Image (tube, rainbow, N blue to C red; front, side, top):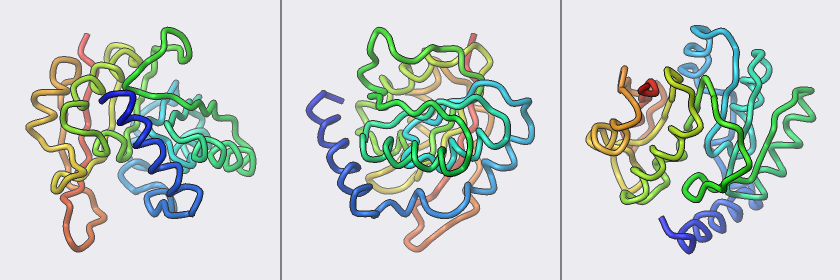
Length: 195
């Protein structure tokens, strides 16, 4: 993805957050996230494309040291307010995951959450994205990725097998429990960082 398309994505999401048109950030975290976090001892987590911080705040409430990153300055502003109102500390950072700066976020995360971030990317950007987030993970870290598998916003299984597989081993692909009409095939992909 070029810097130009990153700016377009940022502008689109920024407008949505300003207008309150972000249904993906409403309600509590999904049951699948709640359940998988029970399998881990809290460590360092990063919420990739954190939006207004719903999931990052939840993870912090469960004892994780959380960093939330998003391209939208409006989302980051709202996420910081949400964390403050919830009484937890989360490091929210405006960050472009496709154009990683030399400095900014310390790597070595144990758990990486992607709730709909990668399915917003163009197909040609998915490989660079998979490589970029792999740099943030320690060996053996878990990437838990929620994406649609049908339509223009999607991460299909073949993309997991090609774009993500050099860095991530697929452990499972489970259909999401929340489904709407038309069915976009929501799926939770669980992956582990290769050594």
